Length: 288
Image 1 (cartoon, rainbow, N blue to C red):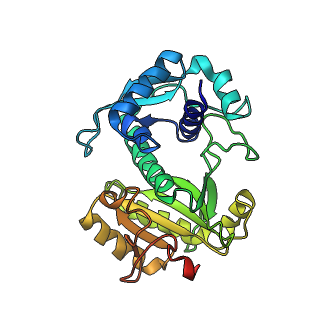
Image 2: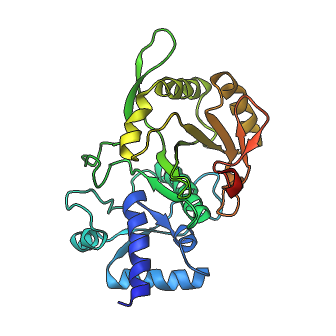
Image 3: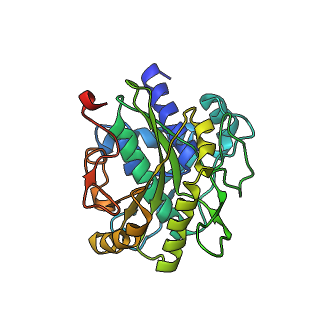
């Protein structure tokens, strides 16, 4: 195995280890010039035993998404963990999912993460904590989620609710050393208003200090965070902006069609309670 192939394999296997499943098109975004080269490389890795795959199930609202979905080959679990320098007890998702609805949601989370990784390039550092934890983070059982939490709603009757973001990540500006903390929510346009409002309330409750658990995880003292909400279309976006208006500027919203590596760092995000469009990171180095 030559150095170039080894580096590419490690990169893709690490992303698979953290984000469970990747489609052919998602893997292509991670470093291939064209789809044919990517498909040829994937077939080779399947023959070598590193990868397994299944056919993507039909997903409502995602026309043309029928393609192969890859995940680590369970027969090579020990070798894959050694390749990635992972603890042997760390979970790896090595079986197809049973629920197509859940994998459709996961695809959208991974679309966002991959667009962000590619968009950030070498200029900014990116770290995302997988839901099960890794490295210095607590290793959990397969049905537990490290990023889940309990938070008290800041309104009567002040009950505690479960709090599970779709993703938690930090972006670091190497020039200044500063980091920004983000939570991600993927909205497919089907969740009820009551459920959404409770989720927004949970974030406002979380902002009262519980989010500081991630200051330790990302080795930086955060003063606050932003919650990025990506939704299905302009009509849903308008409804969400009205709903978020009373909760302050911690919520930044956009739509799925605006998310790709070339646009994700541009001012596509509408800040709740304002009419401003902002970028999630500063790109003018003079202002850093």
